[in-house]
Length: 423
Image 1 (cartoon, one colour):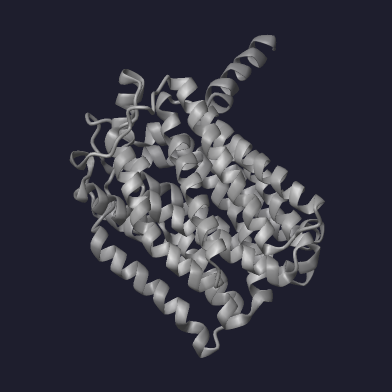
Image 2 (image 1 turned 180 degrees about the vertical axis):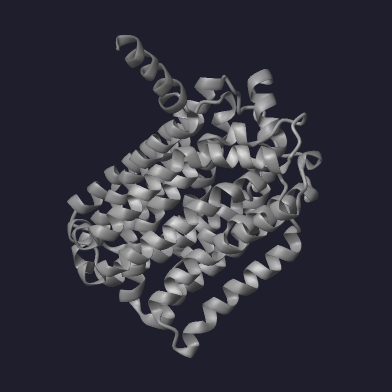
């Protein structure tokens, strides 16, 4: 009996506890749990209008950061694995292309922010916030080159969120829960967290940042185009996050924006759980050159992800469906009348979690089928959905339709490729 227990313990440690996907899942879940508490705090202390404006600011920041980083940390991950581990340096192409792309998108986002919020102050803080968040994101991703996710989780989930809570606590202590105070607290947190990220990365890998300089030879228009294609491909979440909030305010008012932001926080639990497992297994999902991208290989990787993910997703969906009223009452009491929408969140989140692992297997290996044609179809679908409120479409159908349209389109495209593939 003791031998059986010991053997079971070894299996659990090897297949679960020491599994990178499981480690990332636990770390991301705890970190995003802290972020969820931040949203609860803001919803409680801010006015409905202030909370709605914060939701628009945060979604715009994520959109800015996503396009500003342009997925270079994925595109250059193989090169980063080689240069960091063997030469103790970051790839020059990763650094230079990231800086130039951030500057280029800042030219677009800065005036757009001024127009959206009618404030240069908010635009300056958004620009600084985006720089900090891009640095954190890049460092968190490339820190996984040694098949460890601990530094990534520590920086992106714990340090960042704890610093945000600290600055928000200072703001609330000073009896200031205004939109401007909250934005200043978030910007200060991101700048400080980005500096900590650079220092922690330098200490772990003994990387020097003193030799960084932008050279024209390091810049690649072809890499920018490739990165931008995958940015468009993966941008569904950040685009719908911003569209729901900004256009939702125009079509349905600030109350809709506020409760939509709350529902998205619950939906993000599915997204966090799914992407945490995928991100944790990134080094294994990205195939080595000697391995061919075949139907059999894709199926094997997909099942290894679902093996870890499915029990957690099923439990989360059941909890959301059965305890919807209690969950809203305990977390966002101002929005208790919308608790029934958690059923919609559960269904939408389950569909999202089934398709995302397959999609990312294609993305991480630069194998997404007929990407140009697909992007046209995907964004046309989104555009049609966005304008439907003009024709009196129900606001909740609109909300959840926008949330799920990209994963559905992408998943169907991947399944179509697998069906045609013979290998």
